[in-house]
Amino acid sequence: MVRHFLDLYRLMPEDLRAILDDARDRKAARQGWPKGRADADAPARDHVLAMIFEKNSTRTRFSFDAAIRQLGGDAIIANASDMQLGRGETVEDTARVLSRMVDAVMIRANSHEDVVRFAQASSVPVINGLTDKSHPCQIIADLMTIEERLGPISGKTLAWVGDGNNVCASLIHAAPLLGYQLNIACPADYHPDLFDLQRGGNYVSLGSDPEVAVEGADVVITDTWVSMGDQDHEARLHAFEPYAVDDRLMSLATDGAIFLHCLPAHRGEEVTDDVLDGPQSAVWDEAENRIHAQKAVIAWCLRG
Image 1 (cartoon, one colour):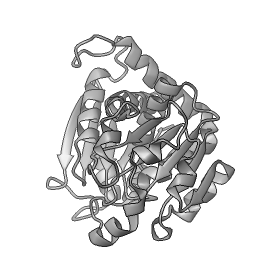
Image 2 (cartoon, rainbow, N blue to C red):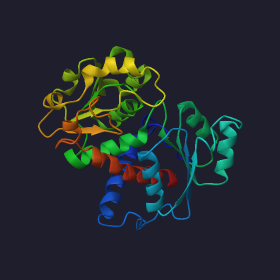
Image 3 (cartoon, one colour):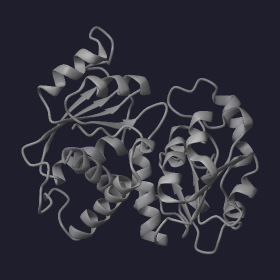
Image 4 (spheres, rainbow, N blue to C red):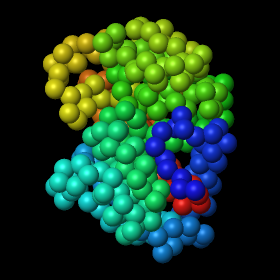
């Protein structure tokens, strides 16, 4: 059976736990190694990963490229200027062609539906590297970072402050699988998708007050207020101004609480310099952990 990695809610709890544990173990096993050396087991040896980017990327591109190399495999990268899903050739036909040429495909796409359609037609694993609806690979790195800093995530309280976007959606998806509480604070016009909130069930609460969400939280998380493709820049800046994460807001969290941001950050907007560069910030570990998270995802898919 082909294993796709499209959304966290599609996983069984034991699969998500296995991916997180593998990411942790792979990181620990190569401490002090050059970054270009392959892992001892090299589970992607003789395998090729195609990476399709419809959106610009720094962390996703570098981390996936490093990940497949450290797993012993190779990568072929195609940008939006090289190919565009569904334009000139159908998504399904592109999937059938690439399935004959590579062993797995990672797609960073504009449309979630395109990635789902691609996976339905593909005979090799398809990995969601980001869409307008979710960002599951980022959340693997986030969860890994939280457990590195704070121990098992079950029973922890996470606070999401700001836009109820694709990253927030994937945090919602993972909450019932791992048993953490997710408190979301966002303006009414920018709440998460209602279907996603239903998937989170009693593990997710939604409100508009960032102080209420952060009070007693173990982790405070935010993201940029304006993402690629958003046309309402000024309206967003105005709506999200009360949701900036600063030292005062962080002081409401528990002692030892950490701050996460998937980056890139707009300093002085969603987060202050003092928080981003301060002792509670784990954003640089979080960024590095994208490599280890991606490795675990690829290895899990190839084992299918």
